Image 1 (cartoon, one colour):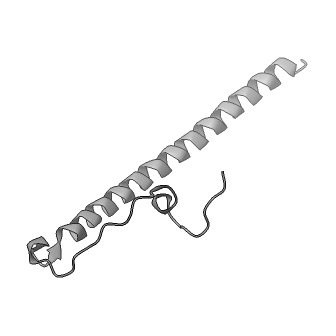
Image 2 (cartoon, rainbow, N blue to C red):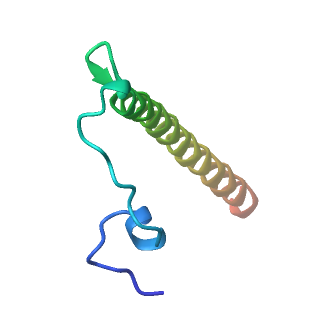
Length: 84
């Protein structure tokens, strides 16, 4: 599967639907000085930061668990091969 180097995101590579047409200047979308889309993007961005943090912590735990597991195997191997 070759990557499409012209597109930079997953959606650009795999979503073949046309982009929605935005209509500038719609007053009905304006609430409190920001559009609904802006607030939605902000919430999604905050969620992505939380997801990235959780994934980072999970990867660190997997690394630590793997290191402990290999250390345990190494110790068990050395115990059985050690000559008294």
